[in-house]
Length: 397
Image 1 (tube, helix red, strand yellow):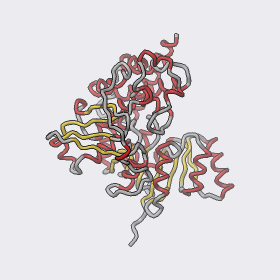
Image 2: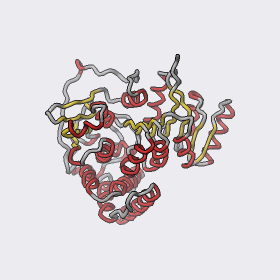
Image 3: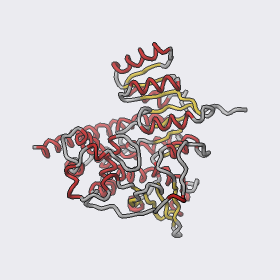
């Protein structure tokens, strides 16, 4: 008897994670059915995806873009229903006709649909690290109470997940610590004194990975790794001091688990997000991802170095925020999103990103109530963004 296809919703389908997910799905039409897609603004790309995969629902943030997509779909004879707004994303993530949700929306905007999917007990493929950075305790509680299956898609966290024993209860007795690897981005060997004049084009030119502009800048500052440290704390229930970071320029070893007996377990592969995506889609099975195979005979070396605190001052903010009151990590995330957007717009210097983040943390100690709700977190997020924008005004003055 043929097994039913897994019904999949991809939130953020026109971004790099979304398009890679569809690439993997297209290789296995017998296993997966795309029932929902969403995009922020790339209507043409979303239309092309609807034309190919024929989802039941597509979601856009505003009515103008939705009307454009509806007109294109009608002209092509495609029956996809187009819905609008944040609530439509939440409804899609929790819909009965959805088995699995790829959460690939960048930023705090992805938190509400991630929570909805978790509470509905979905198979949740988490590529939105902000869901854990902003709402770690709330989100993990929703996962447990909803009975969701949480599968990390970030290459580093997928690597850790693949190296850990299946019995979560044994993690604490077996693990000494974990090591998240970082490429170091485009400036890993650059003189820190020269970083003030970095342009957006230089910052998004990642040497190993093809990613969106925001996460590429985060890689250049290593704030992506700071956020991943916070994410790992919640995913694997680890103390902050049990999470380490090392720069590994080749991006072949994606992360490591150091066991109490001194053994080190690592997951290796070519730097291609289709590998962790395929693992998450088919878990616990493994399917063809379309990624190039790793050829050990062509590897020249695997090198490692400690992160330079002068070149990457923002990295330490991860451990500082985790040891601070609940909500501090949400403030850090909001400040960083605002600072990166301003840098990409040309209104602040590259080196000012860290200054904005650090000053916002100093200026806005969180005051969340016990068992903070989504509304509490979103209100804190808004206050943090306002504070970050005020800091940037002062920096520019």
